[in-house]
Amino acid sequence: QVQLVESGGGLVQAGGSLRVSCAASGRIDEYYTVGWFRQAPGKEREFVVSTRWAGDNEYYADSVKGRFTISRDNANSVYVQMNNLQPEDTAVYYCAAGPWIVDDDLIVPDRYYYWGQGTQVTVSS
Image (tube, rainbow, N blue to C red; front, top):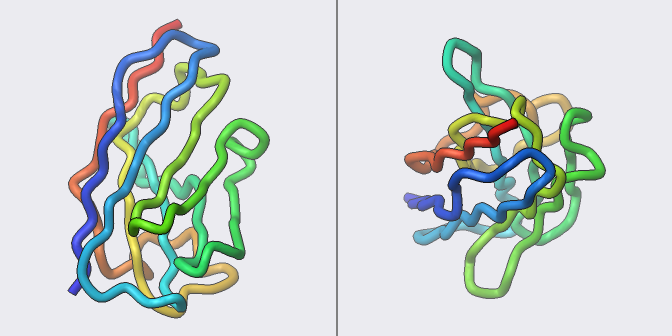
């Protein structure tokens, strides 16, 4: 069983930065993938970025490439540094994890077994 807790959301003006965090506990091994998704009101959940728990194989959605950076520390937390935020980035951001997720499955929410409760990111224009 894996537990995920997000934090770090908030309100920021367009062009600003935020860092969201995902603290993981429980049994999570190196073959797990940790992904971030977001969901805006009235829209489907959208893939943002993922990384293997081993800290490699990063994959970014085109919409955030060059602005967002995913990283992991040694204390079981995964971070997403979000720069140059725009109003269209406004959403609830979710951390998710699952084993053996590769290739086209990385962007599919149903492939991730465990989910956090989400953290709100709001970007004002």
